[in-house]
Image (cartoon, rainbow, N blue to C red; front, side):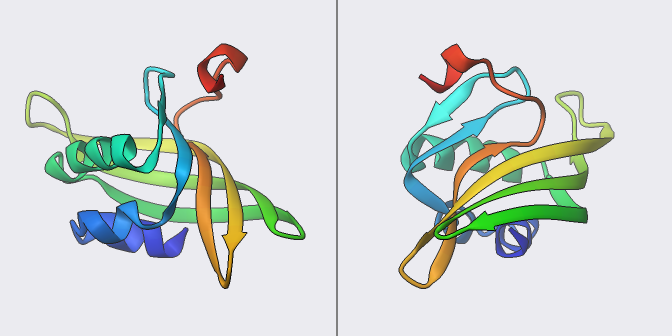
Length: 120
């Protein structure tokens, strides 16, 4: 997760995108589930365009084998649609999967919990 935040903060779209599994799911602020690395890439590009900066404040995780569930507290700063600065405190829920020797995001829900229908 720190690699993802660092890549996003630096505006490195390809590096941020590479932090996700091919079949990952990212839940947007409106609770829409975006599926697949290529679709997530488009969302990340929008986040970078708004100058989004993520600071990971705290982490609690549970790892079992090749899967980990993380609860993180994020401070997120960005520019709103009107250009004004916006700061949010988020309770992010993340699911990571180890693929070979690295951990990748399988599910990222930083703004809110998705409905079961959104993940289908």
